[in-house]
Length: 309
Image 1 (cartoon, rainbow, N blue to C red):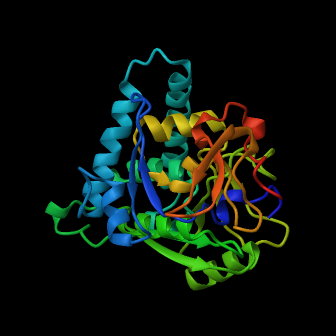
Image 2: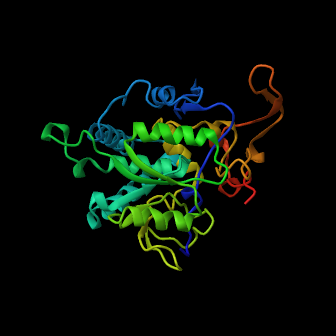
């Protein structure tokens, strides 16, 4: 698939305690909930005061309202102004894709990472005009087509977060552990209705340099349209969006991980190391170096310093 499908189509995240984190860029404190790797507790952590038990239409409508309030806000921060611009562009790309393809003919590649999480929220926020409302007699059992290509050694925290998102965001998610090309070939064979797949690749990702918003696969990849709504987002803009809109994300990001792969090739980013600081893992556990959270990284070019490949 020349022009690459992205780091984000593989898997993401991990450490020893599954935690869902809700952050707010307007508040200096972080709310952390020890979820002990249970789907039920993680679901509660995702939306402590809203969203629990919502049908697809209601959830998407709430997200749409939240995103549009963000777009209408008058920020003094140049970062958030930039996030507003990128959000508007991305929504336009998603709306164009939904004009080209019926909802049943599209899918979204989701692995629990930060970039595809931004994509997922924007995609869901775009859906209300295309969904039947519960009052019209439909929509209560709706699911979003999605595909998850795992890494060889996935982090348990990533899988736990993805499982939570399946419930919270009404994803009909198919998992594959094969290489990416064969995984997508199998997915399309099993889901012949899918013609376009939304992916969260950004231009700074490997093979992302020459991507556009719409790219048909080539070079032996199974044929489908790749839609890249967040391709021009910067690292700081991704975190500006997630924190300002208080979108829960995988706990590994609060442990210094900035780009997520598998347990064998992903480590906390050395640029976020707290010199001389240590944390203890569990009661009587070993002490390890302390890392600042991913959203404190400043340079886009340092995002993959914690990856071996």
